[in-house]
Amino acid sequence: MALFVNHLTHIDVSLWCPTKGLVGCSWQVDAQLEGELGEDGMLFDFGEVKPWIKRTLDSGLDHTLLVPTQAPGVEVSECDEGLCIRTTTPYVMEVRGPTEAFTLLPWASITLERVTQHLSAQLTEQRPANVERVTLTLSDELINGAAYGYSHGLKRHSGNCQRIAHGHRSRLHIFQEQQRQPQLEQQWGAWLDNRYLLEERQI
Image 1 (cartoon, rainbow, N blue to C red):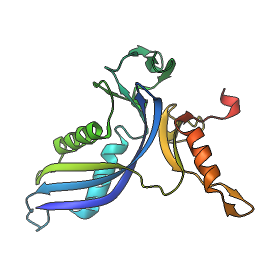
Image 2 (cartoon, rainbow, N blue to C red; image 1 turned 60 degrees about the vertical axis):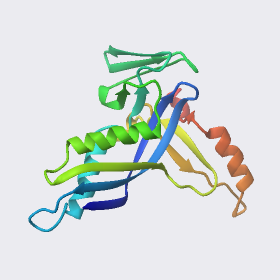
Image 3 (cartoon, one colour; image 1 turned 180 degrees about the horizontal axis):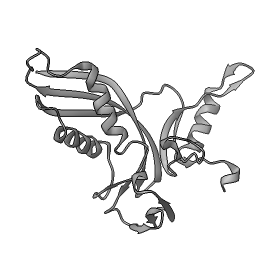
Image 4 (cartoon, helix red, strand yellow; image 1 turned 30 degrees about the horizontal axis):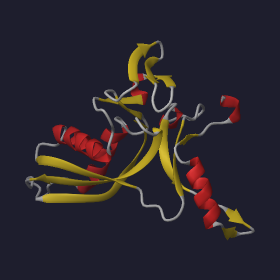
């Protein structure tokens, strides 16, 4: 028997791409749990599914920088802040921060399929007794119109958005005299895509 939970939560991350550099992503999470009915006649209490999976994802790779440690030009070392990530291609970058601000993955590149398999296996290992398998489906958030991915870190944020290099993918609306401007939205979305956003005083 299977239990399906759609639109369960979102994962917001940045990932290091060997050809693009920092890429900001927002992924929708759907889940399928397979197993046998318990004594109460339920596979799993629906009210407990979302908090359990969301808690696991929130304490894992959500709001982190995903680093493919086997990618060309990537070097990971310990430092006073926790970890130091250095890259040489496609551009030079150095990021330092607490260990929990990064997710190190022993891959040459990061793909949505590999992340999906990784998280599904992680949740399956931590599954309740009557659940045999947890399978996640990750997909890009559906955005009609212009959108852009970005990375940032909010120094004064009280939550995980203060992590120096994590990302999101957001829609973009531009109005002139109360009218949407789709052409401008597309132009600015393309220009902003995969930028690092920060305040002037942080430079």
